[in-house]
Length: 152
Image 1 (tube, rainbow, N blue to C red):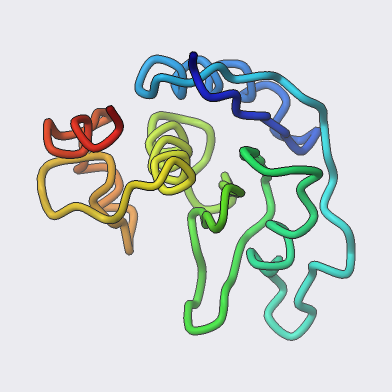
Image 2 (image 1 turned 45 degrees about the vertical axis):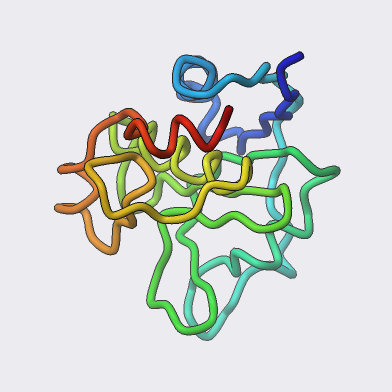
């Protein structure tokens, strides 16, 4: 039986939500359930930085095994920005710095990989970390054989 992942999206990302969800299911053995549009609360907004706190947003998700696509710029303690974040069965991905193209699909898959228990990988792999757009663009939209084996 495939693991069920609940997919949420900010209304501003609605046009990309279905294609991102389809990419997730093409890479991972999951059943993505299109849950609902969900807007971040103002409490998650860090006014001093002008960004949304990723850890706060992860706590706003209604339940585990959930991924949330938002347009807002993300921050987290010790980082200037994040493309996405995942923790304890929850993930959030931002289009703010990467738009709605292939890089967004890569980042969503990367964060889902973390949600499913994968760590960062040094191979040519989706699970390779992306500290900048150049690294994100350079990595493939697929898992390396070692990471794929870990999912089984």
